[in-house]
Length: 364
Image 1 (tube, one colour):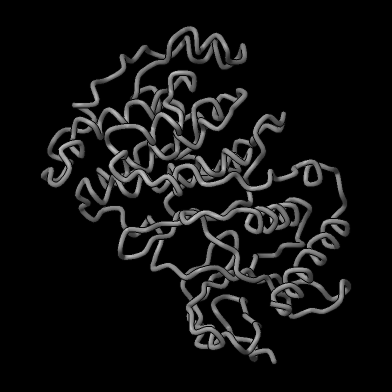
Image 2 (tube, rainbow, N blue to C red):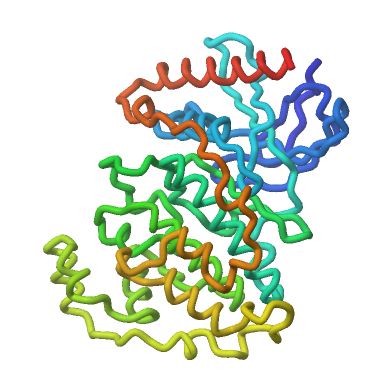
């Protein structure tokens, strides 16, 4: 039995199975509206996301399909788990709504920013992000859109990474468009339309870590050109070796800009922005700065890898083998969602996927 449609905001209504009660709106974003609810069958709290117009165009449909497939694949304590997917429509012709049910967390990381964090909490948050990303990378997945609103947290500082709609496989020739990924956390090699790899996620974690420390976005560019200018004025002009790998037009542009020396991270992140150090002697301002400096290397070849980062003194005190070295999931097969399918074909794939999840959930 379905609930009666519940208006959430704007023109959004939620129609979900009757076992999910006490729906409370908790957010509306580009990817859809989210409600908290109680699952009265097993007594747990869940978050329900209604995907925003999944069949508006091929891009939205492909993104929805990719997100559901990846959420079904992954199994890690620091990555959001898909509990259920649902549509109130039972035929392909009428199919229009998709609801994704996940674990309920307290808030997202953007609401933590601006609150003073001691080194224990800060390093634990960074450790969890690195563990989750290492797991994704081990499955051949680059997240590509890490940002505070895509990381949900609980009051105990445990976190989970979410939103895999933009994730891509390692080693594909697919290039990321300039206006897809949130600009502030976009790696230099992406801004310059260069080949990129898993290191783009490390850059994003560095930007998020800096934001957690200072309470301010590190590189708040107004467009992709301004974003690049902010990177070099804040972090210094990259080496000519790096610049030589860019396109001719990008190289000419960079060479005509004033040269900025790479600043001391002691100046960028002075002692005043950190809390008084307590607890583990390795959780201190110096190690936090060093980790930031390694993650925020403009040249991805100089950037710390996720394996190196997890061995860094600033986070290694949290090391748990089942978190750092969790068994690799079955690699995601990206070949299908790289095909040139029609909107109707994507819709049919999504209908089959959601129907299968509903059937398996009911059988269990």
